[in-house]
Image (cartoon, rainbow, N blue to C red; front, side, top):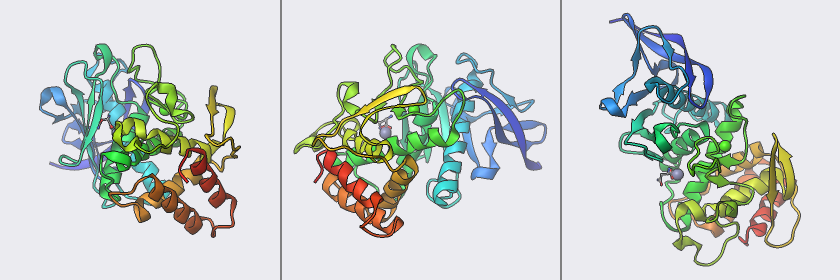
Length: 329
Ligand code: ASN
Ligand code: ZN
Ligand code: CA
C-alpha cells in the first residue's frame, strides 16, 4: 500500500481548528505524522488503535465526539515537537527523530494524564464528567517533557530531584503554550487552566506564586524533599516566573500575577525565552538524577554563564537573585 503525508484539518476540544499532517494509506487517513517522527494517536477505548478517518477532517470540537480529544493530543505532540526542534534543535523527545504516541479516552472520568517511558507514550483521561479531557496544550507539553527529562538528566521522581523533575515539565509545558500562542488558549503562567480539574475553573498550578493552589511551596525549606513532587516543584516554578517576569504585580494577557520574594528583594525579569534556555541547558548538560535545589542553583548559574557570556551579566545575576528570592542560597 502506498503511504504518503497529507494535510488534514481538525477541530479539538481545547485547541480549536487546526491543521494536522496525517498519513494516507490507500483510501484511508491515519492520525500519524510522518513529518514529526510518525507521532500518532490511538483510542484507549479500542485497545489504543490508531485513529483513522475517511475524509481527513478530524473531530467537531465537542468532547462527546471521539476524535476531538485525539485532535488535541495529536496537535499537542506536534507543537511540542516543533517547540523543542525550533528552540533547542532537539529532534524529538530522545533527540533521535522518533515520535511519541498518545492514548486518549483512558478510563472513566479519569482526571489525570501521564507519560510512560515504557511505551514512549502519553495517556489522557476524559476528566470531570468525561467532558474535560486532559488534552490541553500545557498538559501535553508537561507530559512530553517528562520524556525529555527521562532522556537527559533523568531526575529521580522523589525528593528534591522529583520537584525539579515536575518543575521541568511545568516550565516547558508553559513554554509550549507560549510557542503555540493559540487564540483559544492565550498563553499564561498557569498550568491546567483549561481542564477544569477542580470543577470550579481554578487552574491546577500557578507559577508566579505556587502556594495559590493551597499546597505548593513558594520557598525552599529543609524537608521540602519530603512532600509530593507536584508541590516541591513550586520553588523552581517560582524561580522560573521571577527570572522571566520579575517580582511584584504584573498583568499579562489579561491575567494578574503577583510574585513575592522571600527575602524582600525586587527582581526584574529577563524574559521567558532566556529563563527557559538556561533551564534547558542546565537540564541537558549539568543536572544528574540526584540534583537537588542547591545543585540546581549552581547548574543554572553555570548554564547562564555559558549562554550569556560569563558571570558579570544581568542574566547571571538575575538567576542568582531569583534563587535567593525563593530561599535557595
Ligand atoms: N499528571 C501527573 C504528572 O505528570 C501524573 C503523575 O503524577 N505522574 O506529574
Ligand atoms: Zn508531571
Ligand atoms: Ca497554561
